[in-house]
Image (cartoon, rainbow, N blue to C red; front, side, top):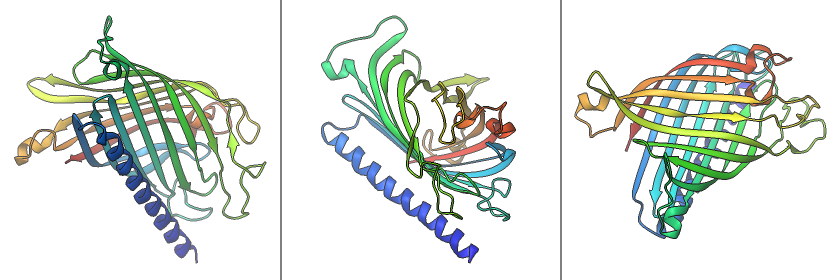
Length: 303
């Protein structure tokens, strides 16, 4: 019975992921109809690490993460879509008393409007080549032994685009986040038995991809950094904490050795520093699971 339930959970997550990918594809198509895309990049990827952390579970969780990503630039800005399917080992269990790991789907979409392109003027100044606004959303669904997150979040705010090789964007975003965790054993959600809305709160968001050379080897430094303020009380009445999440990788074009076109097959090493994960204080009941320092290997195929 349990195996059947777990199989249905995986099927449900996969089904949701396919639906979200279809929606993102339609959204990108609509945005590109107004003007041909200046560039686009689609990729599938895989990463693996053994020291992920989960609040209240500890920091020795191994995860296999499968990834689909699509980004494009069009006449007035850029679109970015990313979907991760995260499969944990038994240290982050799918249900109490089982050795099966939890599974999660996490989706991010962001659209950045370049004001200079929109009005047909050069708005560069100092070290910045442009200004704009970013809007988007995060969605997740996780099946685990306890919280079973159902996060929904909207993001909106101004963006500065640095004048660097590749790109470096800095945004100050206001976040509107809610969750409706579900206990599969009792059928209850949080203590109010409804979707819980955190206090709106700001975030400093940095995103970058910068090519560089080291000893004649062409590499790229990529990643993001999120500095998020506390978001009031959580759904159980506890104070939340300011959150820092820095995730970056150094990637190498290994496809060069296989006769592939430039940046088709990339591999590298990734490191994530995540303190007060999801707003849980690392010095509180969530313990070491709210403080992740995770090393990963990463592979991407671009097409």
